[in-house]
Length: 326
Ligand code: PMV
Image (cartoon, rainbow, N blue to C red; front, side, top):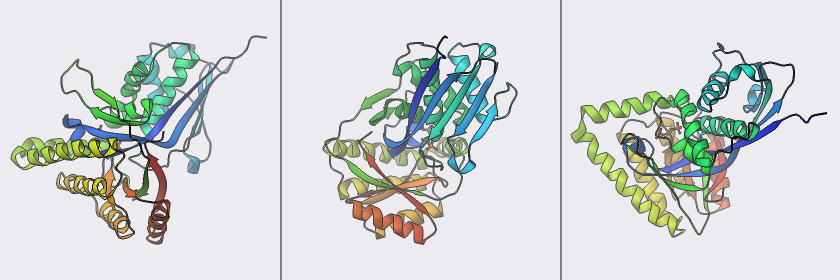
């Protein structure tokens, strides 16, 4: 009996520590992988003559079973179609079951869409023994990210592929590669992620920032330059393993700049205030803003607990995580 083929892949969740939105315009950003990930297993399924998804990536939806149909307006089907096309694999010949599982919390801004694209790409690479390295996986996953985010900077799929802590600079020149530098930090930072439970649309928020910057450059360019200075200072502190108040203050400053470019939200400010009042070194929105989530830098597990309890008493959810471990 011939053994049935299988393929495995994973992609990390992420949090942007410094520079979201500004990164779209070529300013460096720092992003960390989180100890949450999406895992994919592909199994050859003789006789199916199609693609079946068993999706546990969103536990609250329960297990979702779907048979792929080329015309289906189901985001997972569309994403798979794009990835297979980019990998130059003929979709018509496939007879597989795709199992999805995820520990990434179900809210915007922690990279679940990129993790999905990366884990699927990796699993197809493994299943078809394509032999692609991480750089190629990242390039293919970027094509999938476009489905979710229009013209993303590429930061989400990069951290989801490579993990760790990354210095990311988007290239604004066609044909020139983005800069991806792994950052080493000798210590571990403690974070709480807070969820506003307000859905956001990354594509629209990115487009609004671009429109504002282009229509009022004299007002917006100085904000972008301040963001650049912050990210360089933050890099130095991180590389020295300095997760102190100083780093927290840079996060607070970054949050103010994000409000100034119009991607803040009352609930994000509220969560940041609760975190700071509970002893966080600093707090900021993370990701596209307008809702989604925020992060708070903590000096101890006790402060993490305190912040989460305070969030809960205000009707919000918080998650403990770390920087520099994954
Ligand atoms: O994926 P989100 O919603 O966390 O936001 C991505 C970060 C942005 O800088 C806002 C967009 C981008 O493509 O870099």
